[in-house]
Amino acid sequence: MSAVFDLTAELIRRPSVTPDDVGCQALLAERLARVGFTVEHLRYGEVDNLWATHGEGGPLLMFLGHTDVVPTGPVGQWQSDPFEPVVRDGHLYGRGAADMKGSVAAMAVALEQFVTAHPDHRGRVGFLMTSDEEGPTNLDGVRRVAEHLRSTGERIDWCVVGEPSSKTTLGDLIRVGRRGSLSGTLTVHGVQGHVAYPEKAKNPIHAFAPALAELAAERWDEGNADFPSTSFQVSNLNAGTGASNVIPGTLTALINFRYSTASRAEDLRARTEAMLSKHGLDYRIDWNLSGEPFLSPAGGALRDTVVDVCRELCGIEPEQSTGGGTSDGRFIAPLGAEVVELGPVNATIHKVDECVLVSDLEKLPSLYQAICERLLG
Ligand SMILES: [Zn+2]
Image 1: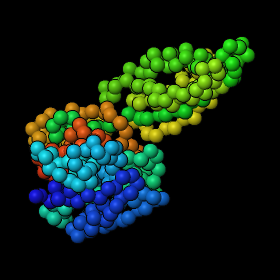
Image 2: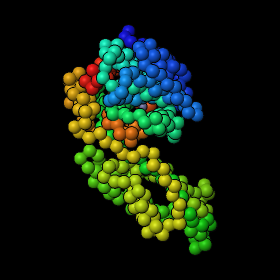
Image 3: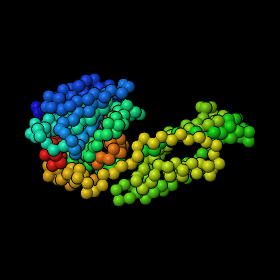
Image 4: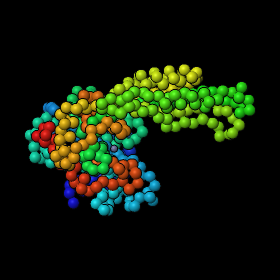
């Protein structure tokens, strides 16, 4: 089999559920060091991060990915061991095959081939891996590395993220930006009491219901040329003691905005709080801004290059999207980098029987290598 297939299989065999790296980064570091990369291991808390670079000066083209995977879910529902790579019907199966050990291996192989073919290439190429992309907080992963890079004055021009961006065929969709994510934990205070004596209690469910209806119906913005309109969702709503004869004393709700560059987080916060206050609620809300929106505008060198590479090597006109969830690109974009995501088909990510088409996997290194050639060759 090919270098990219073998390396992907080796990575899948390591059960690197967040934040455990299980030696994935050591394996990648060793390979890149062998072709002349300077390697730095940045461990923060329980999280392993790897930063490897080749070349001198600028511009700097970074490849970004993660070696951690999400848990398997019920192993009995998998057709084969999730940590034993198996090929069936032209697909390589295993946890992380698509998200994103396949693209991690492809980026590493592409960089090996690029620096071997062009030992004196222009500027620098970089390879940044974390073992904390899939976790709930991402505190010690790329967020911390980005702080480190900022403190050392590192300038990143372009960042290719290997997240599985494609919808049905390789290269049919690239991500050129991401919506921001703003979460809130809302507590509405009432007064607990007997359901038969509502005049002596204050029901927080009844108090919140009209405010929730208004929040859910609100049109937060109209979006813009690059982003769909901002969405508001309640993900959790809890109140009640379990007893049918008790009015609860409090209600909690977890809310989330996926917002475009047409809105600002502070405005969404203020508008939400104004609505809650208008309905006379006694409440507290704790906000968490997990990522600002970012956009790599049309006409940027990286975005144009990735589009060209998809056209020429995949024979497809890629959709240039800002949809989907957040990615670690959100920590790199604020350093001034143009960020574009290109990776395999995402149909099975986080699912039972996660897989990647072997022919897509075999093709991926040539896409990443072409990006290097065009920007730094
Ligand atoms: Zn991922």
